[in-house]
Picture 1 (cartoon, one colour):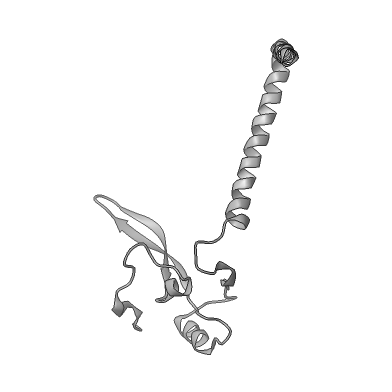
Picture 2: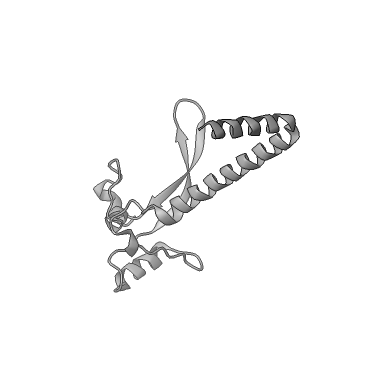
Length: 135
């Protein structure tokens, strides 16, 4: 234990004698640790942690090559034989008004049945029964 204490004192005195090197070493360590944490955060969120849906390994996301209409979605839903459920999500801008000035927010509009497809439920009553009807 005494040797460890002597080595530690020697190392600290050496670092104090060369402040430029000490600063460069500490900056390099800080950047390395920060970069490692950032990369781990992305890998954990994208590859390691499971999606919060029932049977997430069965979910498939498809992007259309061109414009996507409600009629095309209805045709796809009627003809789909290899999937259990089909839902559509549209990103849109909405105005949110609370008190003073309206604020523009990005929102997702989903088709009725989206939460059943995901085997999930919203944390609030998302849809009224009449919202699932055409028009």
